[in-house]
Figure 1 (cartoon, rainbow, N blue to C red):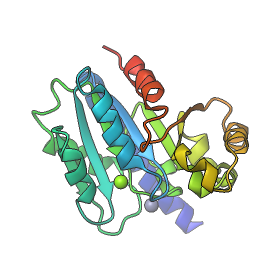
Figure 2 (spheres, protein in one colour):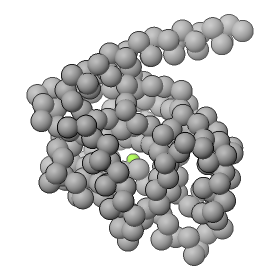
Figure 3 (cartoon, rainbow, N blue to C red):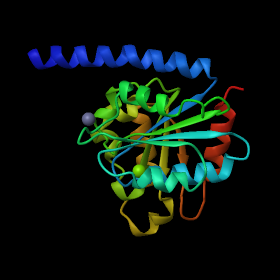
Length: 218
Ligand code: MG
Ligand code: ZN
């Protein structure tokens, strides 16, 4: 029971800071997405393809969350967008206060930005429970992970508005049914908006980016 109480307090504090982040995003007219997934689903590649596709239309800033290294921030900075790396030093999810600190680091660079992409730490469990103040939680899953994952990690799919099924170019080589994956995800969350993408072939990136730019209120 004690553990539950402590967790509640932590989450309550997180939600308070997340609300402040949300106010800040509204004030700056920033549309914010929180990319969540297990490690290796292709979140950073999706960020790269998204930037390539829409950076002429929308100015973009990125917050990268990782347990260690700034490898992802370096990759993203090649696209000449403002990027901040959060290194959690072992923590397996981002919390609203870390995002708040990252926002302070981006000060002055967000004024004309229309889209903020937060790439969460690769983990299909606890990022589901931590609101960062985002407009959209987007869960990314690659077909290599198997079509049963929505059933095994339901909270992540329940708490997300969008599902991106990535690496569809690998479908011929893996034992994953897109039909079952979609059905399992919709069983958990019937409101999920689903996209299928390959960051290697570029398939589906147009549709995903069209949805994203359409969602940005400006
Ligand atoms: Mg990454
Ligand atoms: Zn965690």
